[in-house]
Length: 606
Image 1 (cartoon, rainbow, N blue to C red):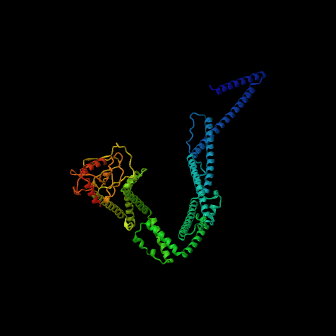
Image 2: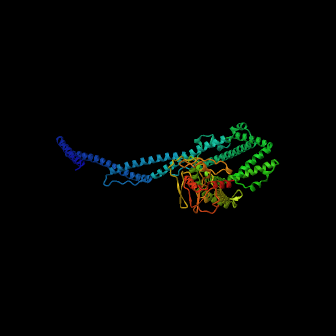
Image 3: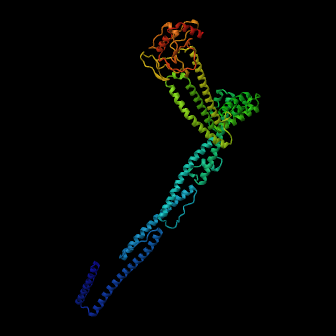
């Protein structure tokens, strides 16, 4: 049982006790029955009025609670729609008082959220207004009267963040561009003369409207100033180039050139004016020194002719080059030709540099070829021969590659320009093939000359004997040092030292005798030092020692005796392996007829 029910029963009991106590009092007093009845009726009416009043108050409270519930429900529905939230769900089996309390609390929460959203919306709108004024854009489109949803507020915040980034980017671009504009204006000595230029240069940076149009106008202004600056720089550079050219042509002394050194950099108006004054002064000097200037131009023309690989016919085609009448017209013709030639060289500079690279490589290749055919190169020291061979091998690989590369580039150039690319009056590949052919013919000619010289030398040695040659440097070897062994016509040929070499007589190689040939007409024989480890020939037989060649079993001496007639077409069957063997064989062969052989040899040499 509830406590309220217990209290109600106690109230009834208390009322019953009170009525009983009243009756007892009435009995003691002696109140008549009618008065008792009246008094009891008064008590009943009084209690009834009191209870009715209480019931009425509670009914009124109930009505107020029901009205509050209905109002809160409507308010909650409206707030949920405005805040884009799900409707509030009431708890089941709740009392009127609890329902009213829950609804009233939920309404208060919703109202607080609405207020917060509206305050945030107002703050975002203020930020948007500031950014729109700076960026000159339209405000963000959102209903200011309604309550924004969370998604709408998030989108608004993202929009403001994008605007803030745009502002920062444009602000940075504006500051950097402003600095460049100020520098260009200072370089050009230009003062702001329009309202926009004054807004950019003179006004505060935060006051400048960062609209798309203003940024574009800012970039346009910078481009215009940079174009003017570039044109000014080009003009100044052209003036400087002209000044240097005239300095060189007029041979201006360094002292006068140093006076203009401060104006040889920069492009300000005062620098341009000073350069123009110097050019005018030099032009007047040029007219006064016409011959000197024209000759200087001719020297420069010759340099560019070489760079462009002009043939003699192409050079002679410029007739004013050979004119001796030095006039202003002749100077203009030379200037025009030089400008055109410079332009032609610059337009095809890569091709000309490639051809020049081939020319340099070709000359180096020819130099290595010349050194390769020079016997004295084997006497070098320090590894130069190995380096030359490596460079020569490298050139032999790189030259064809360079030729193919130039061929492809020149063919492309000829297709673009519809004309032939000539080097020294010839097509480049024809010129290259001609150089290779000339090189081949030169090698053939040198080979034939060597063969002819060797043949003549062989025939001379067959007639008169070989000439002794003393090497420039010899290794000091012991008597038992083994020499090189080579096979020659199936005969083993040994030399006493590694530096001595014996080759076939008919191959063009000279056989070195240990002693010199006899002097003509009975002169005294010259003494030649013998090699180490070699037997010394007696003095009386030094004039008779010659090379011995075994020809079909007979010995042919260097003196060509009468008993053995001279034969040119012979086969070498054997050769003496050392000078000592050569001397022994010679002494055996000539022991019987030394006087006659000396006489025959002397008569032939004389």
